[in-house]
Image (cartoon, rainbow, N blue to C red):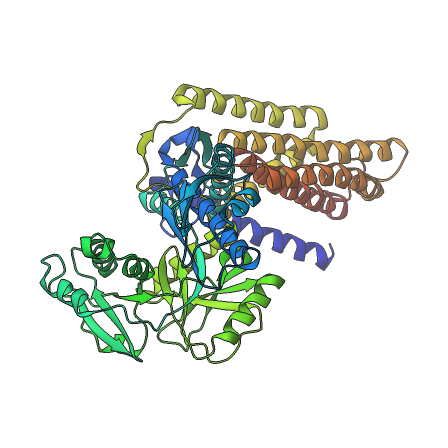
Length: 606
């Protein structure tokens, strides 16, 4: 025997040992060996073990508001560029989800021309006597188109997000304006994480922090005297900018406290009666506190970590750039940094890179707020123009594991894209669902797969004699490798995945049949056993690879364009093709090489 053969046997043995170790992690705990501690294991799918059913209601009204804001911005530009209005003299005002008004500092004589220019998307409801305030409403067909686009877009984005999260194989369907997500019950932590990823809107904006004063004595008195905020909200000043600050407590987060205060202040009669002040406070956002001052803060009572600090930011109304220009997002590590060891790096497309570079060039010396889902994540100072087409988001405070997981989830939602319309929170309905197939159907399917496998194992020795036993051994090794690969990927086993598993077993035997028939032809032609094995494998190799590669490409197409259970079937099929080629060509050849080179038989039992 050659040394190469022994090397092949040794590598195969190591591979089988690793496969057995991984596959044993999927056994019930009472049957697992004491030395096995494998995190990854095969999970049962929704149809086999049940799970959680989440029903999300799409906030179509927010989608209408966004469309109205976009149209209003276009009409403002037309009024300045074509209508003769002065730059900065036109202001838009929302009047619900479908209506908006344009307010002019001076009488605007071309309101009719403006309405005619946009008559395909808005209905002109008239102006006041001085032509300084004109009201418009979105057309019904625009609202219907926005509803359809928002619903289809939300469904697509949620599917992409959950598919990137892992091989959980959920069922995601649309029912009217509701999105139904059925998640296999692996653990409540996994279900909660899926809920967090789904609920993120991933609305990303880059805006300049305004230097305007917005904290007058009236606001500070309100914060000091109102029982809801008394002793919880503090006043600070940094770099000539004044802001309010609140920290997390055991009962509430500082973000909730500040958000409630902003809403309470906006609802005050004197603020509502002053459009300028109301517009100013509508630009006040809440975000995390950054900088060395964090280290001087005391820890929360009973906890080793510091409480998260939140502060208010007044942002300029203009948006520098949005997340629509992000083409890639990735998690990065900076171990030497104590404040932000984990951050998310963003890459913009060519237009986004140009816009970002121009905006930072105009605002050198100002603070740039990175706003994600309405929260200011960071507000770094622009030292010099950023022309590289990239930006980074630091995730602030929390434990290392929490920040790392938050960064990973943020990358998922940014890659999948923002939701066209937000989802109402919490889910409209959440319920547990049992296995859709039922125990009897699962039992019958298991028996059918077992009977087919046993019939296959019996038929091969009957037809090919001793060579059939080699095929059975290769088939057992193939099953072990497939189970180990599925466990290593943490795949979810559903009925389509089981079908792919059984189909692969049949295809694995097909490779053995092709090889054995070629060897028989060589033996009938008078070749020696050693020559017959050599020629049989070389002649069968092309046929095996042609058939397996075409099937593998079919699996790639199913994985690329399929969703949920179809992806599971494709993954199982592609893994099975790789393992069946390995066992059918490489492993069985080891057995035959041992027989013809070590024992040197006069004839072969094929």
